[in-house]
Image 1: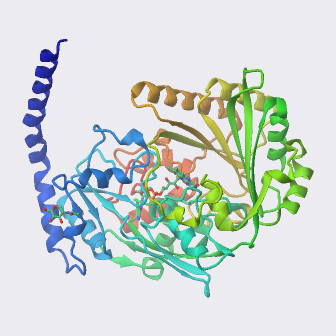
Image 2: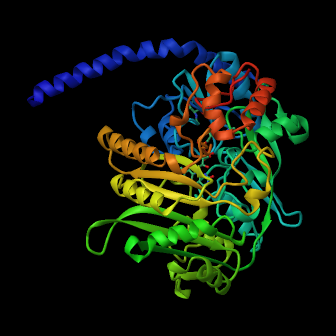
Image 3: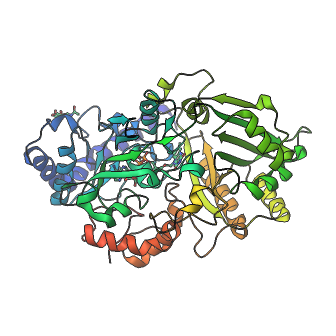
Amino acid sequence: MGPSSSSSSLLALLSLILLLSPWVRVSSASGHDTFLQCLTTHAQHQSPISDAIFTPDNSTFLPTLNSYIRNSRFLTPATPKPLVIVAAKHKSHVQSTVVCAKQAGLEIRIRSGGHDYEGLSYISHHPFVILDLFNLRATTVDIASETATVEAGATMGELYHAIASKSNVHAFPGGVCPTLGAGGHISGGGYGTLMRKFGLSVDNVLDAEIVNVEGEILNKQQMGEDLFWAIRGGGGGSFGVILSWKIKLVKVPETVTVFEVERLIEEEATEIFLQWQGVTDKLDENLYIRLMLNSANGKDGLKTGKVSLGALFLGPANTLMEIINKHIPSLKLQKEDCSEMSWIESALFWANFPKGSTSEVLLDRAVRPNTFLKRKSDYVREPITESGLDAIWKAVMETERVGIVCNPYGGKMGQISETETPFPHRAGVKFKIQYSTTWKEEGEKEADERLNMINKLYEAMTPYVTKNPREAFLNYRDIDVGSSTHWNVGEGKVYGERYFKQNFERLVDVKTKVDPHNFFKNEQSIPTR
Ligand SMILES: Cc1cc2nc3c(=O)[nH]c(=O)nc-3n(C[C@H](O)[C@H](O)[C@H](O)COP(=O)(O)OP(=O)(O)OC[C@H]3O[C@@H](n4cnc5c(N)ncnc54)[C@H](O)[C@@H]3O)c2cc1C
Ligand SMILES: *[C@@H]1O[C@H](CO)[C@@H](O)[C@H](O)[C@H]1NC(C)=O
């Protein structure tokens, strides 16, 4: 094609788009206008709501939409866009958005930190509005009562920073990535390196404020035990909009110790895995050791396997060395591998900030280099045998660009009953697996290859993980475990029992009671009866 013919086909394309776009607008204009009108007239806003409303006519619409998309697979022109984004600046804006979207027949998607691996917090295939909470981000830490209040749009990094700026012996057991939003992360049962000692984020929630489907603000006492139970792990987006959490802080020592080491198969990676697996859920609950299996290049240049271990110990390096030398001797851990630091420094270490960074980096919300992601999860309750591990090594080397991340359970996790919160993966779990593949190349080809690889590895892992149901972690959202189009209990059971086991039925009861017409929904939300 010569330049003239390509520019004329471009012209044709442009006029097609111009022809089509008014039609696209008209088809959704009514709901859209009703919604905007309702927003400006509904209730008396204590703060002007127009500053919170973004439509495609605002030049800041796309940048606002994109700034909280944490998976570049959903950062394309083809990704469905909302009609409106309401970036609530006041609780009353949240109330109005719920009431008005319901009235206008529009779906809403609720977004706090935007880390949903499948983009469910900002994508819908029906006309929709994003209720964005990034402006509601206050955190108040009260060391005297060892509690904090954190608004849904605050990040875990902001929370950790706020805690550390008041105390060097307090912490909160939340996730490792500092840009996680409190709204989605905590309601999904978020966890981090303190989980073996203190359990999940939801095990340390004291109260919450939620906007229900009627647009009312309810606290724990007003919402009742059932709803308060459901939002602590049953997932955001099914029951209402979380405005804030009141959480219990936990006590950590002034000095903690971390290490990170890697070993190839020729450096006893297999023995290390087996030793780790034998003790990881039984060790001192002050010790959390994450283990990763990856494909690597051996010293001979040939493909081989590698384990990487990262640890957080709530205590000094000497004690940590004793524990490791006794239980995982093949690691040959050296004192120089260990670094003593404060808990907040360990949070920076786990988040991969360069050594010496100050905790202010935790306040940075900017998305780092755009990456494309796919994640899946599994749970392991029976030890994997050496021959099983051989097969896994083979699969890992074949599916080269997918890693297996193993997170130890036990400790506090085993002491909390499966029905205490909707999160059911408690006693008996040795470790959880995250399958992880991350890429930078645009386009379908790389994406398809990655998805094929991760599916292949997931398939190969079937014999070694839980079955009936094959348990999955809600926060590691994976659309392949099932999805709803009609939101009936039968459809919901498919993913519901994998995420919640027997708690699914109680979640359906709560949902039916608090949102009988299923206003709060996404592809994996809890259905009504
Ligand atoms: C880089 C990265 C690292 C991660 N590390 C960890 C980790 O260490 N530990 C861990 O447990 N998980 C981790 N996750 C998973 C993460 O916890 C979940 O994706 C979590 O749901 C993110 O919450 P969010 O508010 O950032 O996401 P969002 O995408 O905003 O929301 C996730 C879900 O919650 C709903 N939701 C959000 N806010 C609200 C609200 N205020 N009220 C009601 N519903 C709401 C959304 O609609 C959506 O369904 C990680 C994810 C990423 C991308
Ligand atoms: C978007 O544009 C409208 C109309 O000009 C304006 O009222 C509103 O304040 C703008 N929104 C933001 C967030 O600036």
